[in-house]
Length: 102
Image (tube, rainbow, N blue to C red; front, side):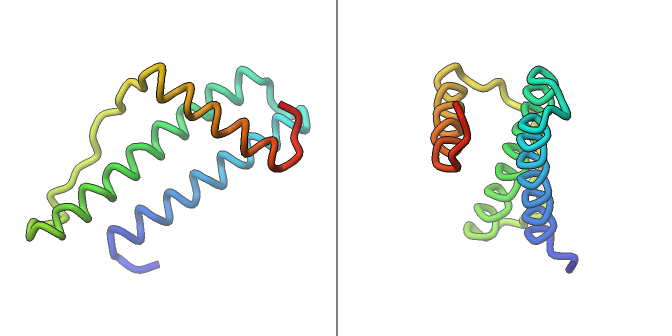
């Protein structure tokens, strides 16, 4: 892949999304426990949030004449109860759409 930092971030995001899917499949096949899946998914979600945040920072800096290299990974934020509920709701809708039991 190229040295473009945006492409690198997007590639990492794609890898994390693939890991998310793999974890759900492992749970479905009984290869990991539900608690292990939740713990690992939480780490993936945090890293995804950080990657998207970094990408947004870079784009904002570029659009405002700043240097996108000044963007930095910020510490993981504690997700509000509302955002967690929203994320779980969206995940359940996706699972239903795929025909998975909820």
